[in-house]
Amino acid sequence: MAGQYLNDSLVRWPSKSLTDIPYDLFTSKAQYELEKEAIFKGPAWHYLCLRVEVLNPGDYVVSHIGETSIIVVRNEQKIIKAMVNRCAHRGAMLCQKRSGTTRKFSCVYHAWSYDLDGNLTNVAFSKGIKNQGGMPGDFKNEDYPLRRLKITEFCGLIFGSFDEHVPDIETYLGPDVSAKVKRVLNRPVKVIGRNTQMLPNNWKIYMENVKDSYHASILHLFFTTFRLNRLTQSGGIIVDESGGNHVSFSVLDKDMSNKAYEEDDVRSDNSKVKLADPNLLEGVDEFGDGITLQILTIFPGFVLQQVRNSLAVRQVLPKGTDRSDLVWTYIGFEDDDEEMDARRLRQANLVGPAGYISMEDGVVGGFVQRAIRGVTEDHSIVKMGGEEANSMESRVTESPIRGFWKKYRALTESFNL
Amino acid sequence: MSQDEIERQFHVQNLNARYVSTIDNDRLEDWPDYFTEDCLYRITTKEDFDEGLLLGIIYATTRNMLIDRVTSLRDANIYEAHNYRHILATPLILSDQEGILKVETNFSVIRTMHDGDSILFASGRYLDQIIGAGSALKFLERIVVTDSRKFDTLLAIPL
Image 1 (tube, rainbow over the protein chains, first blue to last red):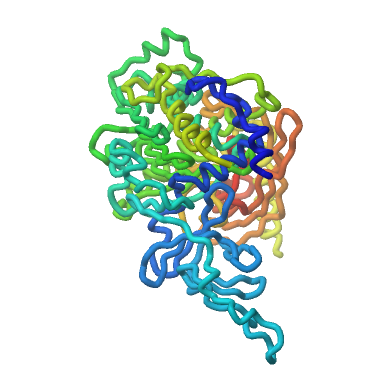
Image 2 (cartoon, rainbow over the protein chains, first blue to last red; image 1 turned 135 degrees about the vertical axis):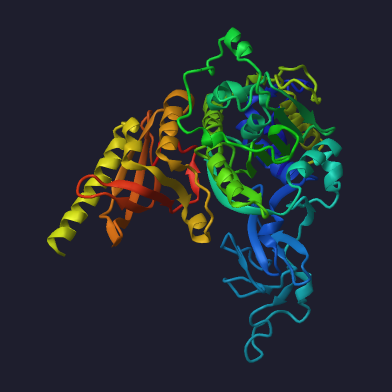
């Protein structure tokens, strides 16, 4: 029994505390298998794509939930559907292209075809040839649809779930996190670019990183030096009731001195660095609330980013215990004028694989992954800002990381293999 | 090919050779000098390029933005020591009009980390607009179109 094997090698938590995180969570193959069932097929919402990517009937995108390939398509009735990208016959992948427009999905292996709702519409040679061969008389196409997913749309984001019992999206997010999604995605968006960063670490190490406001101004010198984000700015941390979703935001205070950093002699304060072309950071308060940075996560692997006028969604996909893909989709709004288009392109330098303030996140994850190889005896310490997973004003906290583990434990520890 | 065309080909090849030598031998401070003061340097993927999406993984519209890129790599950004080895194909001159050479050059870049791990980091083509005469050529535009949409860990050093 697979279950027997898994129970023997699952990670053991040292206590009920959310502050001690065993390192083998990031290396254990058994834990990885458990996550596939309890999280990726469990009662969670998984980001799939943007509404704008499947705007017209027949438009489809191939996305992923965990390692499972998923087709998202708008059907003839203009309703968005999602199903596993796997022929019901012998398991071959149906769509090879990342996106496109089609009237049906047809398997190249034996030409089984499906409509845009995933219904099996045609089986090649189902009646045989010259009354020889063919499918049994009781074979019915309607018994063999593609495996369908539950779908929801929120602010132009499409999420899917294998679990019918997943709560509705706004309940899942909680009111405060929902409000911060609405704050940014308040009108139709357009895609301005896409790429993927292959990270040398477990997907959860990246999620810890992106929920970690404590590191932001210490690891990322660019941020600090140019006063894009400092822990001394005003702002706050929101962690929803479940723990799994969070928002970190800051409001730029132009009068703030560098005093706190100078006193602590933090490595990242290097006042010599000056921009030869300050136009890079020229920004506008497009949401009218002074918030210059907002990082928002939705459990398990979704990030919505506003860094000044650079907007992006990021999808974190597991690729084995020690690899993950960070799929970037950079966006603007349909009604952006030329000036705003240019601004978003300039500010995109801040993020992505070559991002002034994000390239280090590809590196530190690898530092952790390499240092915990084969370790079963130790755990990390996540105590900054207390032991709870609560919202707070101070961003010198690891509260959202504790929230992540609260949600993670709720799903994995209650799961019966 | 006329004598002029042979010389033109030679100078473009020489420009490319000097450009990659500058990057591969870690003389990044000299890298912005290959560009005009107002310029376009953009790294994009084939997918984005074909779709007409304008995002740059690195995006600069002035030489000063390139200088800032180098300053940030030297003083601000954290990444493990590594170097590139650019392998270039012969540049193909597509047009020569109104003082602007349009050139396409295939490239591959092998990345070697400080611990010796070596991978094919990127392949693709340079789409250039080059101005100037003789050996004093500069890039008005260099669009780096990578074949893959995926980048291993990070992209620090420019392509």
